[in-house]
Image (cartoon, rainbow, N blue to C red):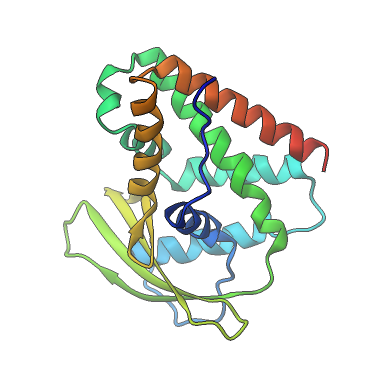
Length: 218
């Protein structure tokens, strides 16, 4: 392959890494939130992540399985996957899209699930929920306190609302959108290959295999 898919080099990619690791931050004591609100959804998502994933007694494989289940339940992975393909999404066949979404999720799981193993009790504070009644999307503004004397990190969650169900569609770290950052990365790879979707899929397969092998040997 001529084009290597690299997802964590630039400052933008570093920001994306912080955002994807955000679920590994603790939800410490905080005011009670109204049941059924988007903010409550984010609060409970964090609580479940810590309970299920920040257990140093589980295997890498089990942590990946639990992270994948949480991702599928609480994030609109298919929507995010289509979004990161940008204009190239129009030329992807249904079969290719199914494979891309699966590989995209594989890479996310294999890249970030293991960050929960290093959880160290960092503080997570929900600031407020932004949006009007009836909005299809709302933002939940939060802050992470690193706990080492560094300034808090602003972390905002964009949530899609469908009746009584919610799904995260983007995380913004200090105002930088992870979804947009990833779209720039993926479309740049496709630009270099002339929009070669099979090549992108091959790169994602190779990346997932490499990450899987690294975790199996750790």
